[in-house]
Amino acid sequence: MIVHPELRRAARHARRPLLAATLLQGAVTLSWLAQAVLLAQALAAIARGATGSLPVLLAAVLAVVAVRAGLGCAQRRTAARAGAHVRVRLRDELLAHLGRLGPAQLTTARTGAVRTTLVDGVEGVDAYVSRYLPQLIVTLAAPPLLLAAVAVIEPRALLGLVPALLLALAGPRAWDRLLARRGKEHWDTYEGLGADYLEALQGMPALRAAGAVGRTRRRLQERSAQLHRATVAKLRVSLVDTGITDLAIQAGTAAGALLACWSSVTGGTAPAGTYLVLLLAGECFRPVRDLAREWHAGYLGVSAADGLAALRTAEPAVPDTGREPADWRRAPRLAFQDVEFRYPGADGPTLGGVTFTAEAGRTTAIVGPSGAGKSTLLGLLLRHHDPQRGRITVDGRDTAAYDLGSLRRGIAVVSQETYLFHASIA
Image 1 (tube, rainbow, N blue to C red):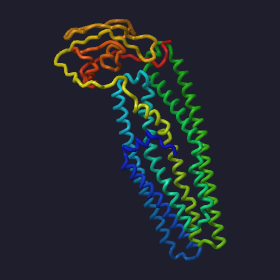
Image 2 (tube, rainbow, N blue to C red):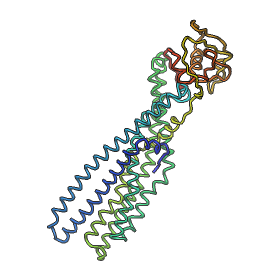
Image 3 (cartoon, rainbow, N blue to C red):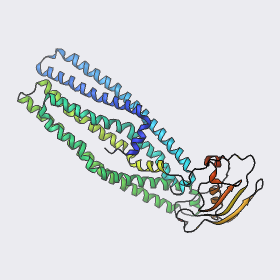
Image 4 (cartoon, rainbow, N blue to C red):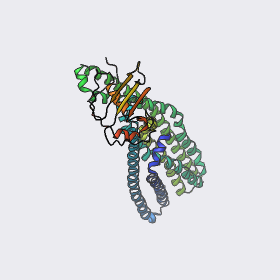
């Protein structure tokens, strides 16, 4: 029952449809209860030889089945609508935030990793929110009500049902921490493979020109093997989780049925009550089985939650504190004054003591070999980064004084087509 804070936050985007989906799921569960009551009455009538009411009871069972089919269809549509709403809102929010972070974000986060989070991670949140959360609420609410009904009919059956139900719900929780760790390892490996694969596609011309296609293929194969190992490790833990749940369900159902039959033999329960306890014993565990199924469907969302939270809470490389609109009536005068800049993790400064003035209305050419810092100058002008020392002014005002969005809208840049690999030059 891992409920990550980031996933709870995502669920708030569709509170009403999720509430409707949960209520419909509860109605589906109640329809199973109604069916159990009607079938118990029908079986008791057959046992007594009073078959006159049998057609009516069977017709009622068919009606309940038809109603449940309609409720199930409505529940799935509502849940799908809620999940789509969460998916769209979350992805829009993350994309808008990524836009505010600017290109500087991708100097520390790989493009493929961000793509994996925005696509696959958000898809996993959809399944978790639309399928797992409603079923979790129903699972926490329905079994206590069913156990209360069993207690009214035959209290001794609780001796088998309650311990098994507690084991089915609480037993797998002992593995939650290990499962969360395995899930994070799986997601990190999956994210790394996605990043490497996207880099290989984007930089394929450079790879072919450098004769590095074979090395890249081997690296992708190794990444795939790592993902396979991480997936199998996660499945081992998940299978233990499922085994505990299934063992508790089967043992609890059998124990409840045996206690109900024993009570019937000793004359403690009427035939209708015995049949009802037998049916309710299975219904007590139906929500638990459904929860296990939906958990596997939404587990990718749990694995991606940390990555989604990291992307959503990432801070821009530069603060947007300026208030001056970049509304230049004519071409402005641009000046760099003793500017020094060093990229994070670099051994030395990319720019050191750069000073020049680009006069208004004139063409200024900046020339230099590859890696001299020409693109970095433009990045500093657009405030993708701020210099560690010196000033950059436009019409005499520091660029930090301008509203960031206004500044970037006021400057047009046409760049060359380049690609840098997340690897060494060699």
